[in-house]
Amino acid sequence: MCLAEPVFFMESVKPPVPVHVLDMLGFARLALALTEGSQILWHFKHKDKHVLGLFTAYMYWDGDLPILAYTISDSPPKAFLAYRSDSAKGEEWMFTDEIGDTRFRYASLVDLKTIPEAFAESLEGKYPEVAHPLLAEVEDVRSIARILLPLSLREGTLFPLWHFERGKKHIMGTCIPFEHYYEADALPVFFYVSLDEPPKDGFIKYIAVKPAGEKVEYVNNTNDAKYFYAKVVSVKDMPIFPK
Image (cartoon, rainbow, N blue to C red):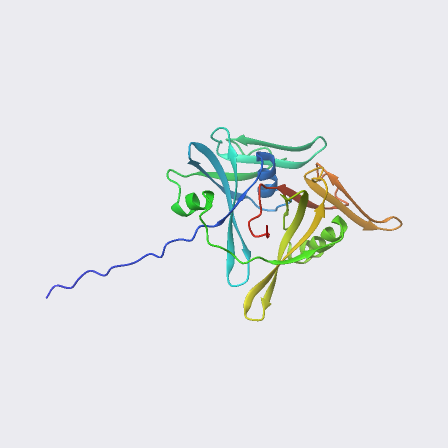
């Protein structure tokens, strides 16, 4: 008697939500600024363009929300992306084949021979419709800093501040998951501030001490260790934020 070989079916992989970072400096800031470890980045060609991607996820309602943050490079990168934000003249980034300069943080670039279908669909806008987070508009940038500071101290996690446009306003905010909300895995809350102008630099710098109290400003470096910093990443759009 001949037994048929077992047939295995692989469920199709759902495309991640695409987030297009506007430039390479912002992408380097997202991947490496204010982080402790290294990152693995993806490099592949799509429609004759070099794409660099960072694959991440938010805990989000039921399960996790996968995000492909990406940017476009004019030329193929080298093996590593190097970045520093504590230079007196501001941020620095470069592609390199060496990781010996300890002033920099490094991300490894994986060159994909073929692009995963899920990534291609994501870049083409073919991804599942996702529920919006709970929106919480705050009064000003100081409130945003007050949200991120305790999370950073308690969990060692620094959520990026996404900046994008909605109509004539500039939105700057961050999505924070509050775990175990009724039957949901997490309640995602997007805290944001609505601005008339775009952020002036890549970081907000915050302190709250006597006698002056709270102080917040935009800066292009993180070289003063007395302050708390949060990184701002400008993107073409944030799909989870309502139109």
